[in-house]
Structure formats: structure tokens, C-alpha cells
Length: 109
Length: 245
Image 1 (cartoon, rainbow over the protein chains, first blue to last red):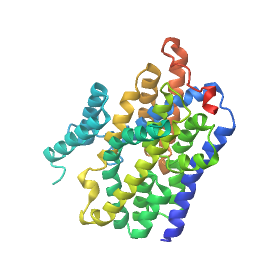
Image 2 (cartoon, chains in turn red, cyan):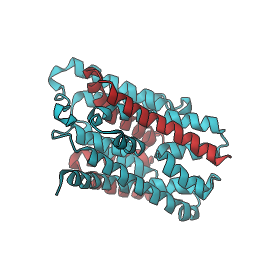
Image 3 (cartoon, rainbow over the protein chains, first blue to last red):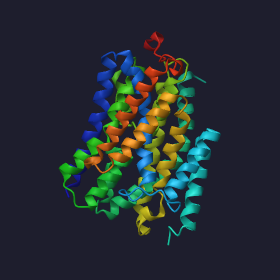
Image 4 (spheres, helix red, strand yellow):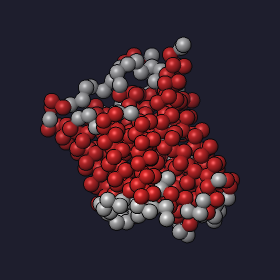
């Protein structure tokens, strides 16, 4: 494995989806409809990352059983986030619930 | 205290909770990269020059699975395509800035700093100095990510299988904590539901292309529901002329 090529290639394509797009869109005025549509990018992308991660922890099969600590702790975290609107509390409590569930379901065994 | 300084400190403060979620993920990355056969220097270079957590994670997993460099680079590109959406979303707010600002704002962009910065930009208030907040969020995450990678390289390799500990849940819980407060209107709820369903349905597609399909589907769903329910339309975007000052 040529690491220079690996890192260089990954760095280049990542840079290309960040910088040129930012510069281009600052130069051309976005139609108001597009600008309004982009407001939905943050929630949509976060949902698209989170839901498969907690619903399919093995990366292939949907697991809705109560022994799926990712799903149970994920739902608990969502409720905490909704009720408290406190990011720090959500992360700390969510991780604690997850680790507790993992211990109870023998996930560390 | 000057306004840029206040914005910068507020950006650091808003990002600190996200660091707690990013650090375990960075530690796993460092450990996983070393066990995948990548050198210490290569692992640090990935964190410094690529600086995209999930793409780095998938990249080193592909190395371990014996994938070729073109396949890994293509996958990285697809996984990071969402950054093009992030850049397009943030661009209207930073168009008054010179090039020397746009480069660091783009280079250090992450999921976390994007959500933090865009939330701040959508809030009412003068836009002129909000890029200090955005930069602060970027830099806070960059420094944390490098430190976490470093810890993972040296401490993480002592853990036989870091993924078995479930530290990867740290990223999920962080993103949940960022997403839930954003769901304030029916169009946003529609965007979240549709993106979730499509993400699960397209999960087995190659190169993680399902992620961008799901994100775009969610955006379209949000626009559709917004057009059907005029009463739940968000307030006009806060693009003020004075932001060009």
C-alpha cells in the first residue's frame, strides 16, 4: 500500500468537495428556492447517518430487538435531547445508557 | 470584548460538547488505522490532510479489507459528497469574506462544525462577524481530532478490538443531540423521516452512495411539505445586505 497515494488521493477528493463548491457558490447568487431548500440539509444528512448506524449495527441486517443497545440507547438519547435541548447532557447520558446496556446484554463478553 | 473575539469564544463553547463525542471516535480511528497496517505517520497524515472522520474510518476499513487505492479514493469522494451540500448551504453567509478566509472555512469543515455554524447563521443577528464562530468550531474540532488520533495510535492499539467496546456509538449520540433540536417544523420532520427511510433502503448500495441519495431525498421531502403547508414556512433566510459590509 502506497500511503502517499492513499492519503494524497483521499485528501484531494475531500478538498474538492469542500473548497471549490464554497468559492463557486459565493460567486453565483443562489436562487431563493434553492437557498431555502438547503435549510433541510443539516437534519436530512444527520438522519441519513444516524438511522442506519443504530438500526443496523452490524452494517447489514436491521435489528429491532431490545438487545440492540445502539437502537435502545439511540431512542433514549433522542428523548433526552427532545426534553432537555441540552447537547452535553444528551451525549453524556446517552453514552452512559449505551455502556450500561452493553454491559447488561453481555456486549463486552 | 470585541465582537470577533466574543463570536470566537462562543463558537468554542458551542463545540465543546461535540468534542466529547468526537474524541472516542478519533481514538478508534487511530487504533483501527494502525491495526489495518497503516503507519503512524500515514495515520496522522490522514487526520491532518483528509480530516473527515467517517471517510477516514471507511478508508482504513477498506485498506484492511484489501481494497485498491482507486476504490478507496472513489468511496471517500462519495462519502464526502455531502460536504458539497454543506459548502453550498454556508456559501451565501460568507460571500462577503476574502479568499484567505474561505480557505480555512472550507478546509476544516466537518459535520459537527457545519451543523453548529449553520444553526448560528440561521439565528437572527448581525452576520458580519459570525465567521469567527464558524472558524472557532472548525479549529476546536481539528485540534480535538488530532489529539484523539494520537491517543488512538498509542493507547488504542492495546485494546484488542476497539469497535467491540461500542465507542462508535459516541458519534451516533452526538449526531442525535445535534439533530433533534433542529426538528421544529413539519417540513423538517418530513425531511428527517424520508432521509432515514431512504438511508436504510439504500444502505447496501456500493461506495456508500446511499448516504447522499438519502440526504437529497430528505431535502426534497422538506421542500414538498413546506410548499403544501404555507403556515409552517420558516421565516425568510437572514441574508442581510449589511453582511457585505
